[in-house]
Image (tube, rainbow, N blue to C red):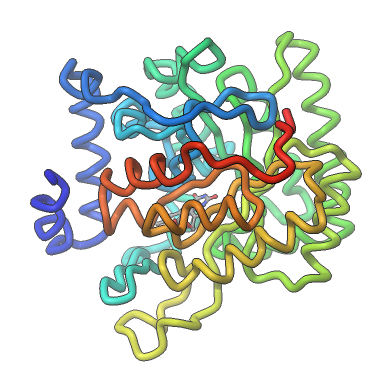
Length: 355
Ligand SMILES: Cc1cc2nc3c(=O)[nH]c(=O)nc-3n(C[C@H](O)[C@H](O)[C@H](O)COP(=O)(O)O)c2cc1C
């Protein structure tokens, strides 16, 4: 209701300014008791990747890149919040403008380019979060931390950045997402190719095992993939995930395709497209992955969810959890509640939790 009043005001502003204003608003609000009073997380709990999620609906990465508004976002009812993508060192991202609304298509194009304050600043913010402090405890918050590489780290040395981030965020995360699918960092998506992926996943698993020993806690790893992959590529990724026993897969990131927005203002802007036009493509990737993974590795379905029915459709395609980003911009917190309701009580034919 409140969001319906606020939306015309926010949409009259430059998109990135509106985004920054919203994060600042949530940051202030999270210091007041009022927000916590309305922040009860509802829904049906579910165990995925060995973690107890209070419901199946999470916030997708990229909205809170620095973990500044974790408590404010959690108060919207999300079962889990993913922050990042964070890189080892701070970086400014691409020149502005780099974020475009396509309101008549309920879509966004962005080429932010991992603008973020670096991993140390993110950790300082996480330490201040009440939600994060409860993560890992019964009834507590589930915090995903999404990691990437700096734009000026050569792709051949990318593993170094991922491992450095993993090492730093490990003690603070419920799970860690390895983002190799942003279209806005040059050559990043090459890491999805067979040999590169094999090497990267091997390094990550080795480091994860060492960190699990050191911290006495196993933190699951999820791989986030692009929607612009054919069936063979998806099959090869699924095989690598199984071979390396990766704990989860997030499908999908934004698309470099432009189908469904022909003729729209901003359709020709470079970057990743998200929102309604991505739904079919991203859901098809979930279905392909589900077939290839045969229930061995859980899937988090993301891309184009603008209604509760669409959240449920991701589960029907084979996802265990869902995330939303662009839908939140267009529909506000009402969408979170709607998705929680639509996914509550869903049980996969074969479920059987896959801890
Ligand atoms: C402005 C913007 C920034 C994003 N930044 C990130 C990011 O830093 N890391 C990431 O893994 N995904 C990022 N994403 C992708 C989203 O997490 C999500 O995968 C994608 O937008 C599809 O979901 P949606 O249609 O619900 O938005 C970003 C998306 C948008 C719109």
